[in-house]
Amino acid sequence: MDITEHQAGPACSLALQGALDIYAAAQVREHLADRIAQHPLVELQLAEVDEIDASGVQILLAAKQQASNLEHSLKLVAHSPAVIDALELCGLLAYFGDPVVEFGHPTQTKE
Image 1 (cartoon, rainbow, N blue to C red):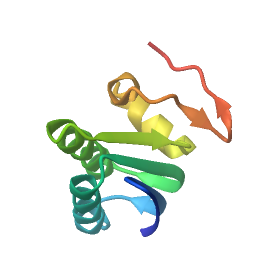
Image 2 (image 1 turned 120 degrees about the vertical axis):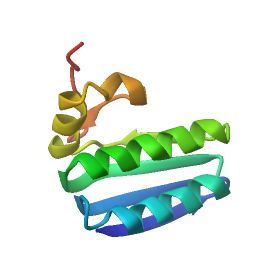
Image 3 (image 1 turned 90 degrees about the vertical axis):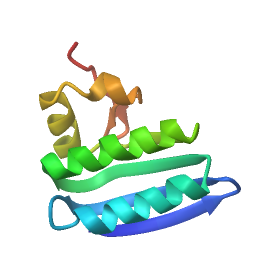
Image 4 (image 1 turned 180 degrees about the vertical axis):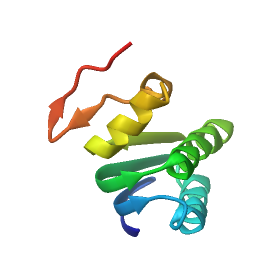
């Protein structure tokens, strides 16, 4: 898992690339927790996530909860097909509350 970071003032944008799975879990969890603690707004760009498993979904849930506990914001953007499929399967698209955009176009979510 590669993580590319860009900062603009108090906001931090992280682009994830590769598999968000059990093998990347510790690295990604630590990196996200650190950035969420430091920045009031963290944006996760997910367009290049080509695989996500249950541990990847757990990382996203934990990051969202941490941001909420700190009264910070975590936004998921540019969802890859793999991320959309995993979040739909778990019934979590609405939980994250972010507009789901795949390949630059809004996607209809199943409710």
